[in-house]
Structure formats: C-alpha cells, structure tokens
Image (cartoon, rainbow, N blue to C red; front, side, top):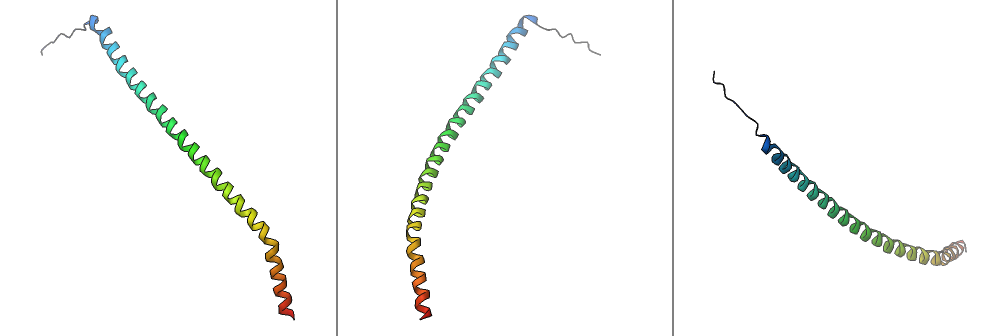
Length: 87
C-alpha cells in the first residue's frame, strides 16, 4: 500500500473559508434583490387592480342607480298593461 501523506495547509483555511462566505453572501444579496423586485412588482400590480376594481364598482353603482330610477316606471307600465288586459 502506498501511504500518501496529506497535509492541511492551515494558512490557507482562513482564505478558503472567507471565499466561501463571500460567495454565499453574494448569493444571499442577489436573492434579497430578487425578492425586493418581486414585492415591488406585486405591489404595483395590486394597486392597479385595486384602481380597476374601484372603477368597475363605481360603474356598477351608476348602473344600479339608473335601474332603481327606472324601476317605478317599469312597475307602472306593467300595472297599466295588466289593467288593459282586464278590460
């Protein structure tokens, strides 16, 4: 059997650990930037949808109000039609 001596170069361990830490730190920073960008995008889309919902709700309220105004006229016309059918 060949006995190969392996040695640890302790003077390089700190540099290797620092390099690994810096690499992981950069990755974390990139992920944080991505999350921040996604949150910003989500927030702007949410605000746009809320505005759209407000516009649609306003339109529905106007239509409902117009319908309510016409309702008595329609009921009166229906009653007149029933009375005419009775004669």
